[in-house]
Length: 246
Image 1: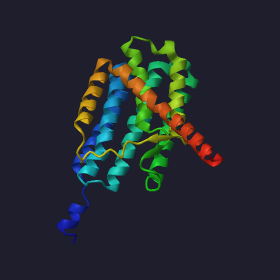
Image 2 (image 1 turned 120 degrees about the vertical axis):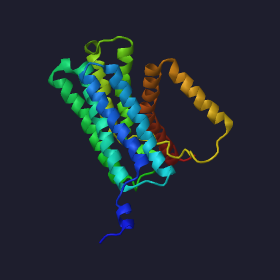
Image 3 (image 1 turned 60 degrees about the horizontal axis):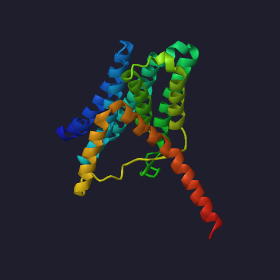
Image 4 (image 1 turned 90 degrees about the vertical axis):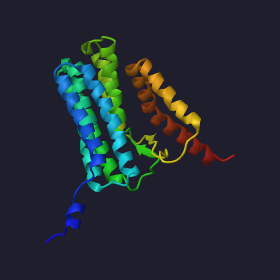
């Protein structure tokens, strides 16, 4: 007969999985909102999911409650919130008027997210923790959702910008499965002490975002999207220069 101790070991940690569940809920809510025609709410929900996704892993590491169950649950939640939800939101807002081309290109994004997550899960123990290989799915979702949010904020009809939005969607999907390296920010130490100026900078970032959230967030993530190709090009040039020698 199994002991009470073994029964406890088969349980799961509540705190980090609450954040993951919140991420999953926000992604599902984004889909429901888009189906009801509330595209701005849908886009905001995806950003909320992104914040919760960033917290669950850090909370698990800080509280020493990381488990294999949490890793797999997080990956499934990411697929819903950053793979399916952004594709459906952007399709309903701008791409459905393009017919088959619209939903096929939305599927390219979803497939890119699925492949990105599968590759991440299989390489998590062998890659350099400082970098992601390919654009992270939350950042790709932020780019797509930011496009929708900025468009609705400025009262732009999705059908009027269908082809530019199509390009953004496909670009986000392809960058997720690319070999471009993106800085992961995982080396930031949340436990240690930081200079007072670091706290001030964080406050200023929040103030800056609050001026015009959709536009500021869109361009912040757009800059991050292009940081991958830029880092790759700089790295290639540096290696070529080292081979040539002085």
